[in-house]
Amino acid sequence: MQAARSSTLRALHSAVLQHLRVQPAQIGSTWGLFRAISAEAHAQGTCLSRSQVADRVLSVLKSSAKVDPLTVSETASFQNDLQLDTLDQVEIMMAIEDEFALEIPDADADNMKSTKDVIEYVVSHPRAK
Amino acid sequence: MAGLIKNLRVTKTGPGSRSLEEAQQRATDFFREACRALPSIMERYNLYEVITLSDLRSKIASEFRKHHHNTNPKVIDMLVFKGREELQYCIDHSKQRHHLLTQYIVGREGLTGDVLKLGEAFKGESDFLKNFYRGNN
Image (cartoon, rainbow over all chains, first blue to last red; front, side):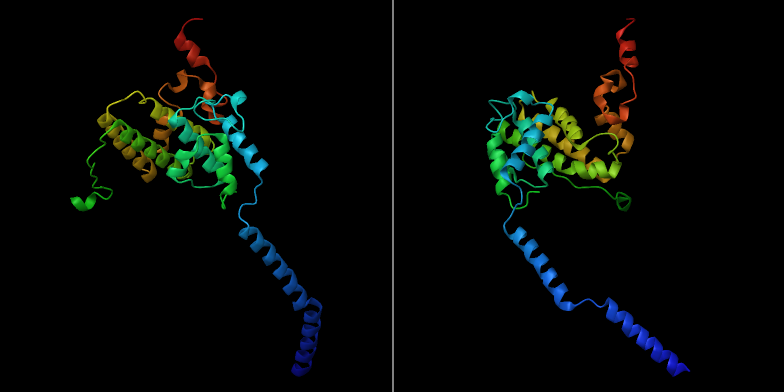
């Protein structure tokens, strides 16, 4: 009685498993493909395009209260065109850091004097999101 | 007695800035430090409903701007030192939420200033107090 039950159970068990068992070859190939895609994306650096970066940088500038939105353009110099002093420039750099989830070292931040510099920097930064 | 003072930090001020540029560089560095601490401060005091990160950054920048006219490097050094102390209190949670709200977010003018500029948390407030203090118009 026990043996019979266990054997039917075993039969049921294997039948269910056979139904549910996924072919290892298929899974292996899809997982491998997925890994390849993510590794490739990681290796080539940032996935952001230059136009995307430019749009986001310009929107950060326009939303800042001290900047006149009409004067903002891709070649605007912070000091001459946008009339920003050093404190404002640091604030803008912090806003850019927040936007792209970066941490820009002080030396690089001091060198950036126009919108174009910022866009170039973010596009070439491997970790920009 | 010394064992009770848990948060005592032995701070030394160092030699101080030799020139105005150096003092201004210190002030800029301190501003960057403060801005980088802002997300954790917003998290700690739960300021998400009250103000946005960029608005808070602007308010801190305006606090810095109040002392923009100083030209004595020693004065600037002293201000940076006091500012660092203040920032440390904010990070350590030695201050409380209402301190930050009244001192920085609502500011010195309080609700007699421009209420509409205060942001989401004060959306329902009216301009009544401002007009009241201004006069019988």
